Image (cartoon, rainbow, N blue to C red; front, side, top):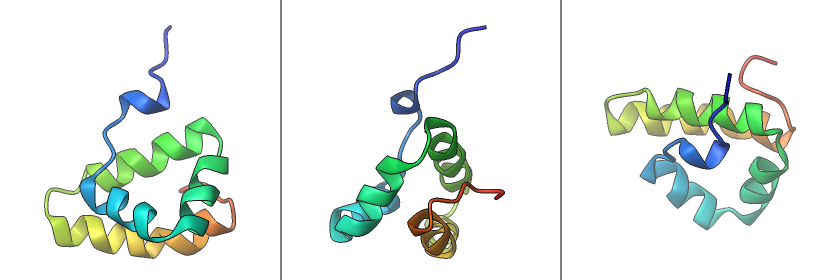
Length: 72
């Protein structure tokens, strides 16, 4: 089975904006394992409404900064 690369997953615009504004968060996100990155991207992008995506991103920021995955 061939797995998709992390770059193949869409990054929601709301998360791009947060990463652009917060260098520490961007560094922490890039330090996560590819599987953890994909988990967060899937979680964020699966929300249909922008406010839900923003809420999910804000809720996940502390875990990303600690290097935790979505379900850790």
